[in-house]
Amino acid sequence: MQGVKVLVIGGGAREHALCRSLSLDPDVTSLHCAPGNAGIAQVATLHSVDALDGPAVAALAAGLEADLVVVGPEAPLVAGVADAVRGRGIAVFGPSAEAARLEGSKAFAKEVMAAAGVPTARSYVCTTDEEIDRALDAFGPPYVVKDDGLAAGKGVVVTPDLEAARAHARGCEQVVIEEYLDGPEVSLFAVTDGECVVPLRPAQDFKRAHDGDEGPNTGGMGAYSPLPWADPKLADEVLATVLQPTVDEMRRRGTPFSGLLYAGLAITSRGVRVVEFNARFGDPETQVVLARLKTPLSGLLYAAATGALAEFPPLRWSDDAAVTVVVASEGYPASPRTGDVIEGLEEVAEKDAPAAYVLHAGTRLDEEGRVVSAGGRVLSVTATGAGLAEAREHAYRAVSRIRLAGSHHRGDIAAAAAAEEAAAEGEAATAGEA
Image (cartoon, rainbow, N blue to C red):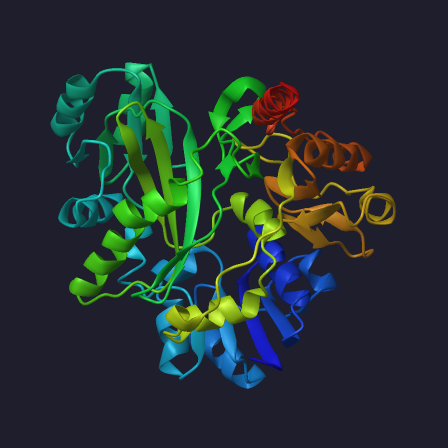
C-alpha cells in the first residue's frame, strides 16, 4: 500500500507509540488521531471525538476518507466502535464487540479457552458471597481475584490477605477467582485477520507501583524486550497451543477475531499458562515491541484488517533491546494528581534522541501552551540499545531530565534481565576462549 490515510483512536502512550511508528512509515501520507494528547499532536492531526461513540468515530473516518482505522483502547472495542467503522466500509484494525468479549469478560475468555483446549489457571466464576467464600477457600493464598469486566488494568488483586481478597471480590458484580500461577509473566502480542495469526516479539511488563514488585497493582510501570531468560521457541509454542486455537475457536463460534490478540502468560513449573487475554495492544509493552519492529506498521495492520495476512511478508526485527520506564503522577494509582507542568521534554529530544524518546500518556496543553499532567501514568520514556543494559542506561538518563512535581517511577525496570543477559554473554565469551 502507498498513500495511506490512517486514523488512530485513543489518547494514551500506546496510541502515541502507534502514531510514532505510523509517522515513520513511508506509506502513510496522512495521519490522524482522536482524541490524542499533547505528544501525539506533534506527529498527527488531532480531532475531538467521543472514542466510545461508534457512529461519531465512523463519521469522522468517513469524513477524513481514511483508508485504515486503528482502535487502540479496549473500551471502544467492547462498545462496538470497530463494528460501526466496518459498517461504513472502512478497513479497521480491531475486533468486533462480540469478539472483544475475550477481554470484556474474563468468564467468557475462560469458556473459550476451555473449548479450545488452551492451558490456563483453574477458576470459579462467582456472583454471590457464598460462592466467593467457597472459591477463596478452595484455592487458598495467595488469592487471585479478577473483576469479570473491564477495569482499566486495575481489576485484579493478588494478595495473601483473605479479607482484602474477599473485599475486592464482593465489590465486583461478577468475579473470577482462580488458582495462583507461579513463575514469571510474559506478554505476547499477535496480529490476526481471523484465520492467520502472526506473533510479535515477547515482552515483560511491571505491574506493581514500586521497586522490587512492591506496592499496589497499576496499569504498568515499565517494560522491556527481548527476554534473555525465555526459551527462543516461546512464541512458536504459544502460537501453536494458545493463539491459533483461540482464533480458530472464535471463528468456529461465528464471531471471528481480527486485530490484536494479547496473551498474558505465566511460565509455570508445569508449562505455559494463560493469565488473561486482551483484545488490543498492551500498554506499556507496545512501546518496546514497536521500538524493535522494522516492518512498516501500516501494511501489517491493513493486511490484518482486510483478511490478507497470509500473503504478508515475514516480519523484520531489530536486534536492539528496548526498555520503557513509566513516569507516573503523584498519588498514582490510588488518587493521581493532575495539572502539574512537565519540564525537560525538549532537553530529552535535544540530547537523547534517537536512542531515547518520550511517549505521552496522560498529558494535555494548558491555556499557556505548556504540557501538563492529565492522568496517572503521564509519560513512557522509551529507549533502545545494543543490549538491555545500554537500553536501560539510555532510558534512565532521559528520565533524569524530566521534571514533574511529585512524580515517581520504578528504578528497576529490566535490571534483573540485564544482569542475566550480561552473565550469559560472559559465559559465552569464556566458553569461546576455552
